Every structure is written in C-alpha cells, then in structure tokens.
Length: 280
Picture 1: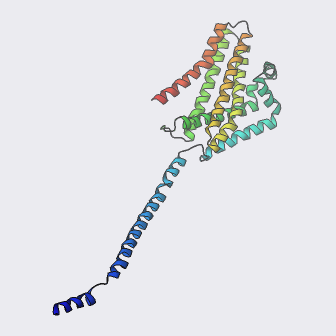
Picture 2: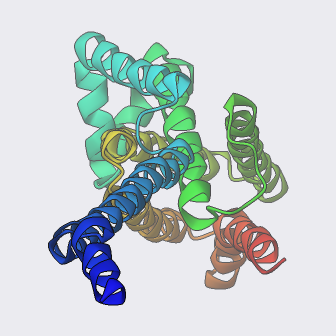
C-alpha cells in the first residue's frame, strides 16, 4: 500500500507534464533551426554582396575605350578644333583637297596654285592625321592584344607618332631618290602630293569614328575606321599607277617595282612585326 501511494505521489507531484514536452520542446527545436538558417542566409547574403562588385571594378578599370583617359579626350578635342579652324579659314582649299583625292583635274589645280606642303592648312591637317592615326593604332592594340604587357599611357602613344613620322619620311626619301636617279621631278612631286592629301583625308574621316569608339566602346566603329583607311589605300595604289603610266618614261615593270618599294613593302614590314609579336 505504501508502495502504490509513493508511486501515485511520484507521478502526480514531481513529474513534468506530458503537454509541456509536446508543446515546448518542438517549438524550441524549430526556433533553433530557424535561427540557424537565418544566420546562414545572412552570411550567404553578406558574402555575395562583398564578392560581386570586385570583378566589375576590375573589368571597368582595364578598359581604355570608356572615356577614362583624360589626355586622349584632349587629343580628340584638339583634332576637332584643327578641323574647324581649317574649314573656317581655308574652306576652298579644304574642299579642293577632298576632290583631288578622287579626280585628276583638281589634283592638277592644286599643283598649279602653289606648293601645298608649305601651306598652313596642310601643316594643321598633317598634325590631325598624325594624332588620328596614332590613336587608331593605340586603340587597336588594346582591342587585338588585351592581355599584352604594354603600359598604355602617353609615352606608348608617342611611339606610334614616331613610327608614323618615320614611315612618312622614308616614303619621301624613296620618292626623292627615284626622282633624282630617273630624272622625273614632276611625276615624283605629283605622287608625293597625292600620297600626302590621301593621308590628310584619311585623318579627317578616321577622327569622328575613333571618337565614337572611345566614348561608346563599340568596336565596330574602330573596324569601320580601318576599312575606310584600307579603301583609301587601294584607291591610292590605283591613282599612283595611273600617274606613273601617264609618263612614257615609266615602264610597267618600273611602276610595279616602284609601288612595291613605296607602298607594299612598308605594309608587309608592319604586318610582319605585328605577327611576330602576336605569335610570340
């Protein structure tokens, strides 16, 4: 009898109610799981927020075609100022130069009106051509060789200006040497003038295209600029052949060798240098 009483008292007074174990224990375990899941989600979210911006910043910092180089913008602005000045103060000569690239009559008219090489408009447009051509090559290296070891800065751009000037001086030397050897000063001057105005026209056409490329980053405009230069280059080869063939002193073989030495060989050398660097 004592045994049953103790047992009854044990279950009635000292025991923990069953409802407590059913109601509170699962709630506590569920809340623990929710808290742990919330903390994990918070850690994941914070990790994602820290990681995502990093590649975006690195990618945008390495692009040069997004308008993030102030000195390039100043050079482009200088080019447009030169074009505006020449068009305002030398508009007749400026339009005559455009027409002389495509028609022989206007080229002869330019020759009769004096030495175009010494005119103010020619010097300014030559500066514009050097800046436009140099920036075109500068942008092309970033587009074709994005992982190259070159440091893109004004010094790197200056190398291209030196290369363009050296190539032009080499062409003038070849033309002058041939005119002395074969005693053909008139056709030599005509060819030199045509090469000169063809380059000036290419600088005028290329400048707005590379400006759009620089500020938009759309590579199609840079390709269009090189296509325009290539088209003018082909026209120049044809016109140089026509100028040489107009003089009976030149044979077809002589014209072919002359054009190879003047136009084709320098182009082959440039392509060879680029291919060696690209393959190396």
